[in-house]
Amino acid sequence: RRIVPKGIIPVYSICSTARKLSSNIGNDTSDAAAAVQAAPDITIQTALNDAVKALERKLVPEPEESALHLLSHSLDLSWENGHRELREILRLPSTSNSILANQLMSEEQSNTFQSLLGRRIHLEPLQYIIGQWDFHDLVGLKIKEPMLCPRPETEELVEFVLEEVSELIRNRGSTNERIRILDVGCGTGAIGLAIANRYRDEVQVLALDVLPEAVELSNDNAKRFLANHVGENKGHKLNTIYKAILCSADDYTNTEEGEVYKMGFDIVVSNPPYIPTKDMT
Image (cartoon, rainbow, N blue to C red; front, top):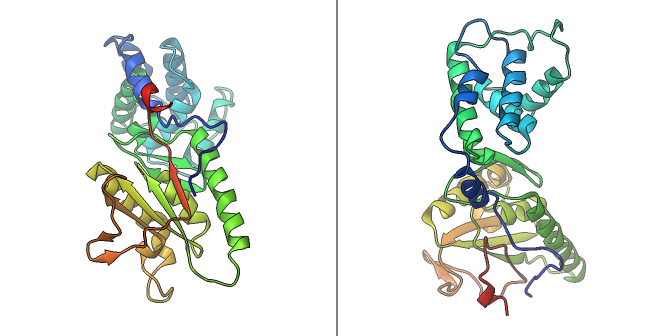
């Protein structure tokens, strides 16, 4: 079964667009340097407010979100709640007695924040700067170049596939055989892992990519999100649920490193970054 979701355009990156836009900005990062002075007297609230203004002046998309995440990263706050705690500071008056708002930044924290702001002002994707992002139910998916950044629209594709998986589970009868899914061009592993994470006991995802970095990153993310579901007490290995291998779709066979995979897949999903016009007819 091949899934071609209606109304979903298979574009999976803001990164290349960001790089094109950045060429029009130039090399002036003076706003970033001025936004956060490496001094012992700057508070977190002042640094945050100044950073938002600097990003707004440079017309950086979503300046508040960028400043919140970059400052949270610079302060080494928790991934789950750091930016939320800082968001509350944005709404506070300068006379607030909030402990976090009035906390002084160290010179190291200020220098780190300066550096990250400079990268963001040049429109480097926030996901690359921070090195992780939330996707679907995956909190803190690891992301790095040259893999493309998962887009919110890609979550719609995941939801479409999850509906298909749910239907297959209802119609498969008494068999306990896992539903087999092929993810072509896995990148960070976002799509396949989101599916495997939802139906850990029901599916087996085999992911393909032609980039060694993508295969390594996908498998690392799999360990991060699925490892606690496998082991001796669970009765199966991680690759029972998810495995990424270095291979193109054209070259794929059912044997890899001595393991035999059946060729039949219930679902094939792919969300490639770009499809040339000549290949769309």
